[in-house]
Each structure stands twice: as structure tokens, then as C-alpha cells.
Image 1 (cartoon, helix red, strand yellow):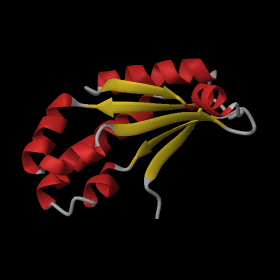
Image 2: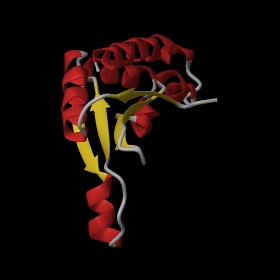
Image 3: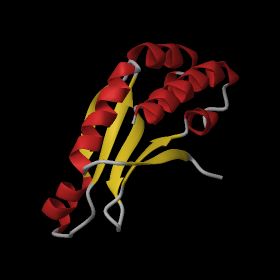
Length: 128
């Protein structure tokens, strides 16, 4: 069973990252962190790696609601969205499945929030 939703996206890598950030913003998410995995591996390990960015996306209102229901939910936030380059030069955008993520909390009060995030991520993917 998959724990992500993904879509191969046409375009240059940096453009896809920018479009992803914009689509997330359109759905009320801010990108709290942007990890350039390729640069980190090069700097810290002296290793080459494909272009790969991890975007830590958070919708403050939904995070607030979630934390009110489950204070430990912060350990699962922000929701990660990754953009990576395939071996063939393709670009893929992948996001954590919110239902699977909050399912770890085993708190049914979070189901409606996970559904809301899922719907927003679906619209993000549609916009790409």
C-alpha cells in the first residue's frame, strides 16, 4: 500500500518546484522548509545525487485544528511534498498521503482534517 500520491509533471525541474510552491500557496499552505537534498549530500557526504527537494508544507488553520485534537500531531508535521528528477530526466511531484499520516495517530477526530488536506493536495496536483 502506497503512502504517497505522485504525479509526473512536464517542465524543467526548477520551474516545477516553483509551480508546486505556488499551487500549495493557492491551497493555503506555506512552505516552512525547503531541503535541497542534492546540495546537502554534496556538501555533507561529497556524494552526487539526483535533483531532489523536500518541501515542508503547512496550512496553519488545519495544523491548529489538528493540534487541538491531538497535541502529539506536531511530530507528523509539516506534510512533506517532494519534487525529484528521474533517471530519464522526468520530474515527479510526490506528497504524503494525509490519511495514512494521521492514521498513525489513531484518532478519528482527525479524519475530517486529513480528508480536507487530501482534497487540497488533489487540487495542487491538478494545477500542476
